[in-house]
Length: 384
View 1 (cartoon, helix red, strand yellow):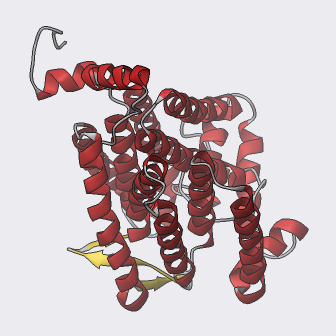
View 2: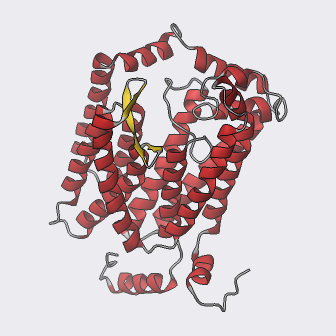
View 3: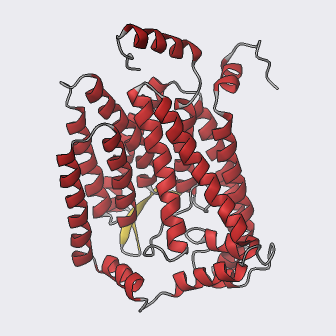
């Protein structure tokens, strides 16, 4: 235990970090590692790999991801913003490279090899994009003559164009929903709400018309006809698990789910540990989102408020999409369950998101005192 009397980076970090957030992130990572033992051996065996191949790789990604999360949580809001700008530039450049030099997987070019590792740049783009847009929105709110909102719209257009070019409809919808939520918080005029809402609907219609795989997934979801093996099997696993599950290692249906260790790990959790356990997972994500939004509501600094809200919305909406697909409430879409599903890029990127949240929600007594003084004097809150 670190004494309150101690002074130094570690002691200051320990006494200023939001320990509820920290415990929640570590708990989700622990659940993911536990579920990797249940979900990944069958997949490894189908690929003629060692039964614990993906478990070992999950563990190998776990420690660096945790280190990244803790390391980023030491940053100040100014350093978070600068880190996000650099990360966004690098990830956007890599997304462009992936379109030309990336490996094509199931008709999409989302991955790029770097130092022998396959990286999905769009995963790292998401938290950086949220933080940079939060800064642009906050600058416009602080000084209306600065075209922050316009720059945020242009940046959104660039990001969405790259995501559609891959193509990756799921990430496009996720990014649009998060960005729209932040823009709404920043005081989006009703005209913009109507225009952007109409554009989103129009974009879905165009995607359905021009992209056969998108049309196929939507048609299968609406009619139940065609190749629905994966989602049907996932739902069967959930039903078989009943309230309290079949027990660790007793899952049977999980063995024939193609992506049981990634997109459908929620179904594996249901079969072996039950619906009650899955409800606990949902409550953990709900707690994370509600705590983040509560913090954003109390925060007077616009940048911190928009960034924290956007980051927790990103985790919350992504988890909703994953769980919704498992329950056949949404069309099938390859999207991981944050901090739980297997995936190096996904886990590392979510830990970057978690690190940003931890850094921005740290208690800073001196900063709060200055803000209260300025607020009472009617001078407003200075930008970070």
